[in-house]
Length: 133
Image (cartoon, rainbow, N blue to C red; front, side, top):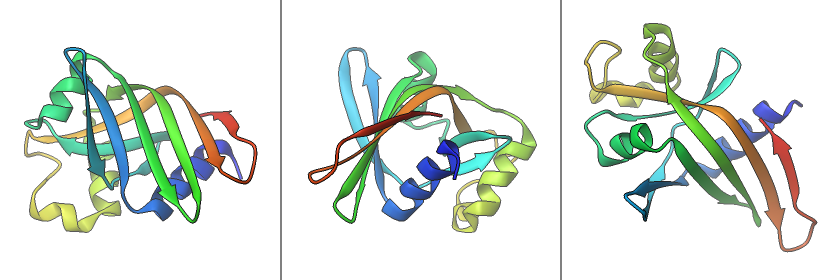
């Protein structure tokens, strides 16, 4: 399994993961649940009106942390906006429950992808493993 799919599948299995952003020097962490592979990249989704979106667009450095079955992952890297209709549609098709709040053409749907990132898989019983995605 390639590293991108491995990271994606781990985050999907977590269900909820936590995204950290920078708010003028103050870390901000919140729960997220969207993760998708599109066009060979790892994507997340949020609303453009949300503070986290504004924080990522101001400072694209983020970190994700998720935990499941005694193991955790940290994904650290930089994100960029993908404003293409197809990228938004792929995310919303993967999470149809979001369509109650978002639409590809609503001007609020924001999909972001990692431009570069490292993922570290850890547990208390095994050595940590870091991979590039």
